[in-house]
Length: 284
Image (cartoon, rainbow, N blue to C red; front, side):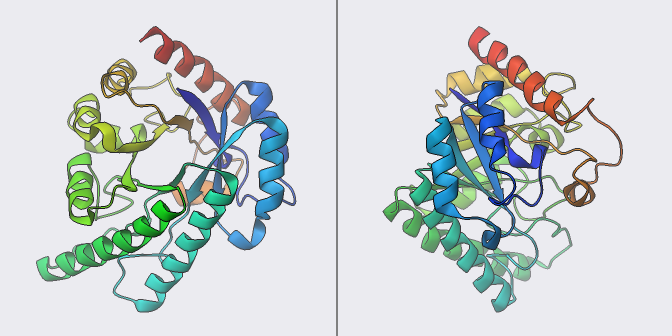
């Protein structure tokens, strides 16, 4: 199993002009993977990113950022087209970087949480299915998988739990489309995170290890023993990536509602979380 850290821990938005130092940083910490959060593709020089990865021996995961103007299932055609152009960029960048996965809530948008009529909900679902069919096939031809992330009810109203995600995967019917699970969201929404992981099984393409308060993994209420055993039971072989946020990165802190200090510093989230996860997974 490989362990990774998301660039959101330290920087937002990520840019290759200023933040390639993170490759050496995570290498020195003992990580295998840097998950690059792509907020603005214009800020990223993919060949430079590839060189940094090769020089350090650190793998790359592409993490998508899907706001209201990048909504694959929106009724607004402009938002859908923007999401498609962004997904195409992410897939092609992942292929160039030899990144196995593009991750994130690509079926909808973060911050979309509202009541809908049954008719509107079905139409939205159908647009998500069609979009993931199209771009899942495109990803497959590029040797890349799309891993979509169920979010908690306060951040999205389309996919909140594994069972909804599995229903979407079944309707999409594309082998390159699977689940990106996050223990923070699962802690809020699943009745039993370990059981949900077991139901997801081989359709888990990516994993975020996040504490219930988004602090250092292992210091809160997430059922880590159950999560680790379930991942072992389903023979998960992908990366386990720490994603967290601190008030130091103000733009993202506002977006995810981090109003207080949840760890001594940003490095503690990464280093402490990695030590905990390695021991947890190896012990299991």
